[in-house]
Amino acid sequence: MSQENTNNEIENKTEELSSDNPESTGLNKLPERDAKGRMLPGNTANPNGRPKGVGLNLTSLLKQKLEEIPEDGTEKYKDLFIKRLLKKALIDGDIKSLRLIINYVDGLPTQRVEGTINTVNIDYENLSDSQLKERISSYLERIGETGEEEGNS
Image 1 (cartoon, rainbow, N blue to C red):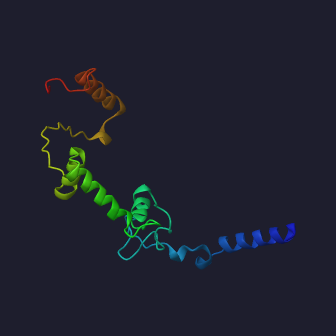
Image 2: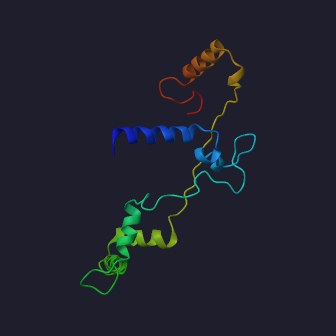
Image 3: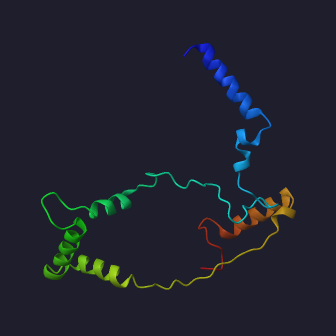
């Protein structure tokens, strides 16, 4: 293809995209939005979805591999894995394996966390720069070097 033909094609594409025809610019395919910019029901910003092959991570690759049968075997890798884990836990008496099985079957026990959170409601938008700097300085003096507010320890 000659340089002249390439230049003509580029000019034609540029004219198509800059024309007032919404079909050529793809503007008619934008999702509909309300006055606040939120998409209306039934619209999506990604109509084609996630491309195939994207999002393959170690977990998904391991799951795929566990579904395979070794060349010299008759059982899937996942079945062999479970048998070996059960043998190690129940026959060999490995405590870590036992704990792993129990946690997967029954789930980890819940742990209650107690504490208090101090919140300060400040209307930052209506503060002047000097007032904001004063509040920040005051807060930094209160928490000191440890990062904890005085009187809360």
